[in-house]
Length: 130
Image 1 (cartoon, rainbow, N blue to C red):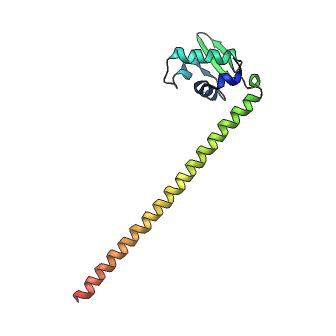
Image 2 (cartoon, rainbow, N blue to C red):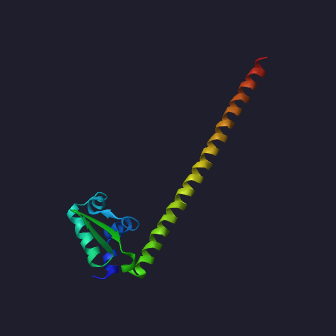
Image 3 (spheres, one colour):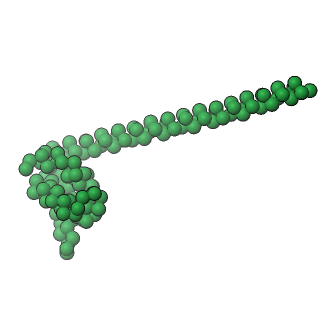
């Protein structure tokens, strides 16, 4: 199977993202998915057979890491895709924070305005009572 076909599957892309910077055991990878360990193990085998991850065995544990050199230009594409998604997420978070700050400021101004109006009404009542 071609590398592009392999990474077309969303879980395999997510596995690659998980092992992009750090080596993880098969169990650590499987914990992050809502499928069986066997299903994750099959995805790992496909990734390994395509040369997209390396395997290191230590005792009974198997550790995986993305093989960026083995990916060739696909590595640059994946990195750019993940960076772009992170940039979009950061922009969304920044816009949400800005909107929240503006909303809070607006509420504070409105709250003060109401108090001033209430104080003005109280003063008017005092003025008419005297």
